[in-house]
Image 1 (cartoon, helix red, strand yellow):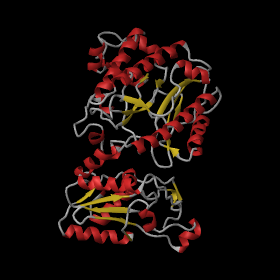
Image 2 (cartoon, rainbow, N blue to C red):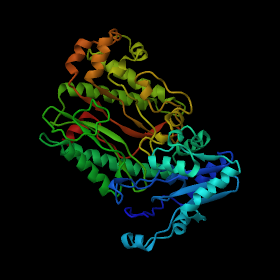
Image 3 (cartoon, one colour):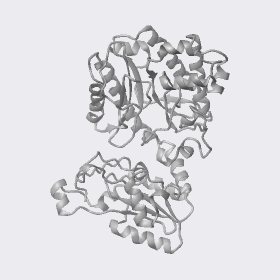
Image 4 (cartoon, rainbow, N blue to C red):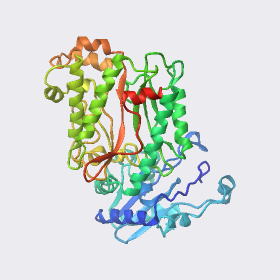
Length: 470
């Protein structure tokens, strides 16, 4: 038990915070029992050599306990809250040192009843025989799918479809709105994320490997007492949106796209992107495209306010890209018609932003249709279908703003061969940009009662600010 993990007892917030969260959750689910599964250690290549442990965010949000092999029950009908887990044996203590008991840890988070993990199956069997509903969230880890099979006889292939929509919606409707103490923690993550980007921008030189920059950024996150919030993107091939390969050598004339963020010790995330030249300055062509991405970014920011659908924020960013690309002769025609036709998606095939919090893509495992779309269906149109957030904005939402321009040769060639967007794209001129790569900047924002504010300290964003660090 717990042979390879260092058990952490971080009291993220006050016990009252967790007690109130569980109370609100109970009030928003009608009846039955809520089952929340924590995560286990994940072995890299044998049982005792594990990846960095990361607790399930929803389990953390409601119960705070940050170590493996736990489950929790909220019995709505009987008014009980129980954490199931095991205390350490003497052999565990030999390897890990003296640790508080499960009950002592639980009391830190307002939990007064704990039981051995072996009793969970019996508790659920009793609930099942009483014909009471058991609510659980869609599992994203295979071990938790197997647990549901063993505990409730649910086949792993059916664990998603048999999860509780009522519980999903209740969790989303709590976690989507960030409290002041959560915002404060996110800003700590964003501040560290800015330092990660500044370190990479200052260090980059021709002849270096992408891996050297990625290592420098990760060092900042770990030194701050946390971890990276997702695998670092540090690439000279910025046209590939999620490029985690770090083996290329930086050459004169290249740009580096850095997308990385820090996760605090309390498991809240930052998520920022920067694009910077390997040379001391951007080339003229790089500056032209970079400025368009900045204009698109500012167009998105200018739209942010309570009640504004984020889909409209995204479309405003898309329109500005069309306007800027038309000024360079790469696009043409009416900007609104071009966006309606999806012509912008040849260069901007993804979304302008997503929710963020304890997860860098907040609650993505619960389904974007609930988190970012308030239960409404997503578009199936290329480009728009990759928009993770579309619902009207509300105070307390934390999201990213990250429009970009990407020259993806395969996508350009495919659209040209289709001969459908020639009213809006000058493919002959675009041909000369097919080796350009891609550019994006990203900031994290909080929607307020009156508008928005950018979280954390300023990330170098303008051409002048970036070049000053080079």
